Each structure stands twice: as structure tokens, then as C-alpha cells.
Length: 206
Image (tube, rainbow, N blue to C red; front, side, top):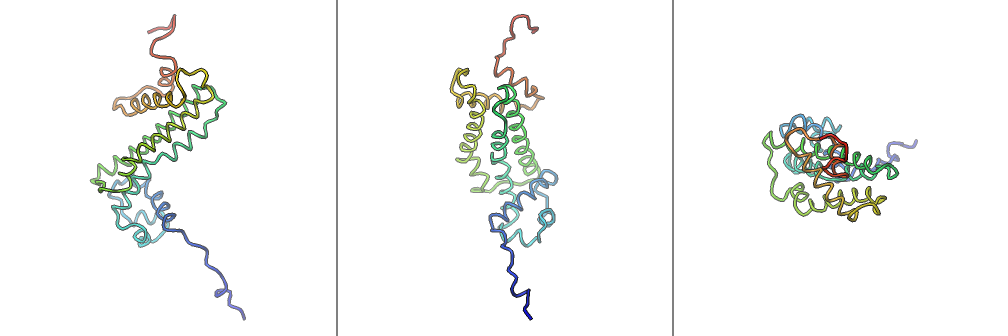
């Protein structure tokens, strides 16, 4: 009689990098709620794993929190959202969608950073998120600027400057407005002022 148990092959497990990514994704929503006070047991339950599994891929909880901050700072999701905006839409509509995607990106970064800072977590020197904020930060902004430039490309002939430069100006205006502590302008208003300037046309009320 053949033993099916001996002949059955085990399904390949996750690589350490895949497991780290899975744990970080499970931890991020919890950080917004609990900050650095979130326990590794709670994170393990959210990830559907045993708590000991966390410490097979992270040295300690601090390393996990640093990895979560690094993930929140990465621009990948925002770049994918920008790339999904249809280029056959009118330029104002493209830029409104881009602004909304970037607003969501900044809010995500802010919620994680604020929660960790408020609960006493301090990033360690050389932590992954400091690399993103250091040399990697320039690369992050460059990838977002490039994605916005692609949205402007269909209107290249109508632009005063190359799309890449226009994208930089747009991001400078948008990020400044989104970081203001006072309630900001609606996204479509920011886009309108960006495209048409601050002066109203003839007959417009001030």
C-alpha cells in the first residue's frame, strides 16, 4: 500500500522577502489605529501567522516598524494610479485625477508617520525608511514626476515648457497646497489655477 503522505510534495513556502512584505501589509492599517503601541501578536493575527514567524524575518519590533514606515513612503502605489489614468481624457480631468491620487499618497504617508511619532517611535539610524527619505527620496520624487509628465505628454505642443518641467511645477504647487494646515482649495480649483493662472478672464467676478 502506497503512502500518499510520503509521496505528497509540500507547497513551496514564501521567501523571507515575500513574508516580510505580507507582514508589513498586514501591519500598516493597524499602525494608523494603534501607532507604535500595536503588539506583534495583533499583527500576527491580522497576517494569519504565528507571532514567532514575525521574528524569523524581522530582528525585532522596531525593525518591523521601520519597514512599515519605508513601505508607506514608497511611491509605487501612487505611480500605478497615475499610470492608470486614461490619456484620452481632457488635460484638466487627467490632472484632477492625478492630484487626487497624490493626495491619497500623502495622506497615507502622513497617517503612518503621525501615528508612529505620536506613540513614541523614533527611526533608527540606517533604517530602511531613512534610505527612502535620503538618496531614495530623490528617486521617489523623480518617479512621480515622470508619471505626471506622461499624463502631460499628449498636450506637449500646447505647453510652454517640456512636460517633465511642467510636471515639476505642478507637483511643487500641489504638494505645497496639500501640506497646508488650513483647509486647502478643492483639487479642481488648484488644477484650474495651475492651468489658467490666478487672473480671472473678462467678465469674471473677483
